[in-house]
Length: 143
Ligand code: FES
Image 1 (tube, rainbow, N blue to C red):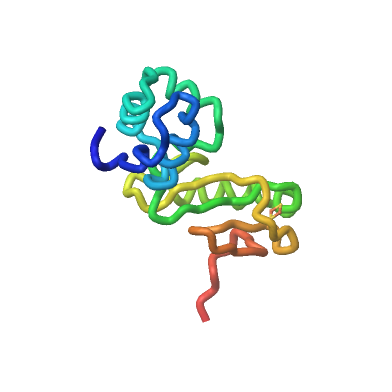
Image 2 (cartoon, rainbow, N blue to C red):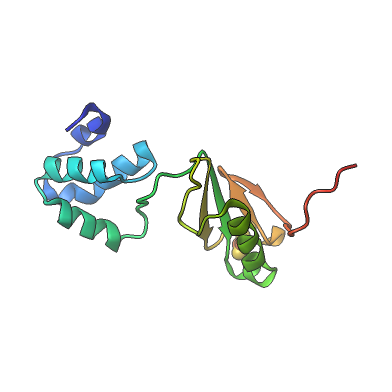
C-alpha cells in the first residue's frame, strides 16, 4: 500500500471496517479510484471484486475523480417544478458531460442532487458548495 492511502492505517484493519476505509479514502481523495480499491482490498484482506461490489451498492461513493469545480444542479421537487431539468440540460450541453462525469480537462464535474436546502431560491445549483439561485438559461447581460 502506497503512502497515498495512509489514511487507512488510522482504521483497524478488520473487514467490518471496509465502509469506514472507503469513506476515509473518499474524504481524502474525493473519489475511490481503481488504485484505491486495490489498496483497500489489500489492507482489509478482501478481494478487489468484493470491494467493487460494496462500492456499487452504496451510492455515496464516487468512482470518477471530481473536477476542480464541482457543479451540483438541484432536482428536488421545488427546483424541478421551476425548471431544473432545463438548467441541467443546459449545463450538460455547455460542458459536454453527463451527470456523474467530469470534463476531459478535469475542470468541471456535474452532479444532480435532491435538495440543496434553499427551495425558496429555486431553481438552484451549487459550485464548490456556493449556492446560486433563481437560475434561468439566459446568459448574463453585459452592461
Ligand atoms: S428542491 Fe432545490 S433547493 Fe430544495
